[in-house]
Every structure is written in structure tokens, then in C-alpha cells.
Image (cartoon, rainbow, N blue to C red):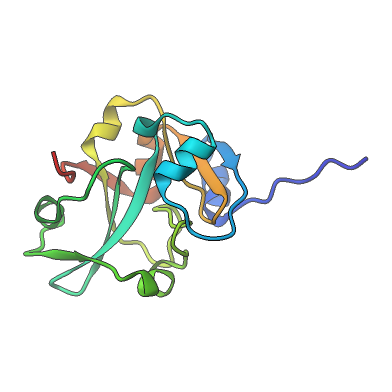
Length: 161
């Protein structure tokens, strides 16, 4: 019997090309579920699972923020981190057009364009974090430093305390 081939996402292919190791997780998912539900489905510790958010600055530029699933993005800190007067969350209906990904499958790795990307500073203390794999039903675990490299990101203090 033939072994079923793993379906790679664009994010996974980028990591492969860069020589970055990761672990992929898959789960059944027909529509958007939040990060907390995904962590619970996969029995993953909440503090390791991160979500990817996209915002637009007052300059009309887009910015990507990667934060823990149980945290909230501090819009003032986020704006300061990217040098904007203010940022506002991107409307759900615009996510695909801006990123190339759909809600629930959005990852900072391999978006349609390279946007300024900030990862919550608390990730630096973890040996590994888990982010969307680039489609519904897919998560990837990798070292935070490797996420920074693959997404051309930097750490920033961007979460509500």
C-alpha cells in the first residue's frame, strides 16, 4: 500500500528551502476556529500557540503581528513598534486579498508581499512556538528565532499586559 504524501503548504515549502526544521500538525477543519480551540483539539499548551494578525497603519501600509492565542494586541504598542501614529485591525473580508491566506490559515511566512512583521517579545523565552501552517487544518511548530528568519520579523512588545 502506498504511503500517503503529506500535503505541503507554501509556508512549509519556504521553510524547507531555507533549511529550517519544523513539526507539522494537522486537524480536521472545514471553517475558521480560533487558536484556543485548535490548541485544545491538538492537546497543545496554550502558551506555545500563537496567532497571526494583520493591521493597517495610518499610512495605509499593512503590518503583521504574531502574538500568543490568549493575548490581545495592544494597538498603541503595535503602532509604536512599526513607527505609525495608529494601526487598526484589517477587516476579515480583506485578509485574503492582502495576505494570500484565509482567516484561520494566515501565517507570517510566505504572504503575497513582505510586510513589516513583529513577533511578541515573550516568544523569545520559549524553545518552540506553534503558528498556522498556511491553511485551515495545519499548524507548524518551530523555534521562535527560525520564525523571525523565515518571516523577516523582529521581536516587539505588542501585547496587552
